[in-house]
Length: 283
Ligand code: PLP
Figure 1 (cartoon, rainbow, N blue to C red):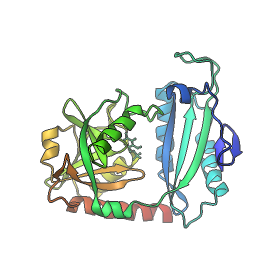
Figure 2 (cartoon, protein in one colour):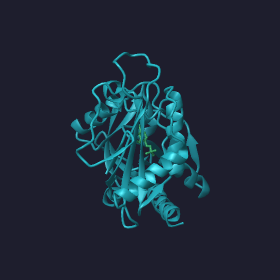
Figure 3 (cartoon, helix red, strand yellow):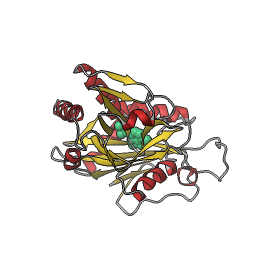
Figure 4 (tube, rainbow, N blue to C red):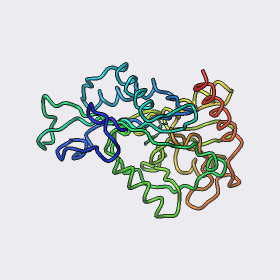
């Protein structure tokens, strides 16, 4: 069952108002949350980011963190998500419905929508890694807000696919930012390099987990911008996201990264991340 604007509805019964601003303008925010073995993973971090995104787009949420937590748990129960299941929870809040003008209408009521989908961990892909293509970062200047406006992300991913790669690595004037729907890490001399969490990237929850795990295990982390030349001579590359976890990138623009296999630091972080999942969902 889906939760749509205060109602539980069956698949296929959900309807969008033609003047929903999420639909017309991408005027809204969202989160994709991991469910491991029937339990919400990093839920508090997702809630914190959702409330921050709302503030940044001047959207006053009428729901408390407790109400959203209750909703998420009800959604899992109504969809019979049990301790056997790995899944994702999609939660979106549009600014609401109003006659179509660009500025924000007063008295508008946000529209919430949420659903779950089964989703296995990408275990085989994480062993092999993905190929990547460098693409210009054509997105806007507030990539830190998780908004429904994803056309830039859609296009850069498609440019990479059209070039025969599995994902895009984005650069803005030669400075590497992130990937189309994930954060990017380079490994050089055993240490991690990733773009600082400013307005040019999404502040990924998996990114932060990996940074914390690395630091706790003696792996140096540099949250510093780096350029294409640095990327091209990195020993290893990997991306992080809620669904892709710690995904090695084994080639860029058709050239092998390192020896073309997932590297030792990446593999170690995958193991640390897997242990972290177990520790998080089994407590
Ligand atoms: N960067 C972008 C542009 C994203 O869309 C996402 C996730 O959707 C991420 C990074 C990774 O964020 P998280 O680890 O919170 O899933």
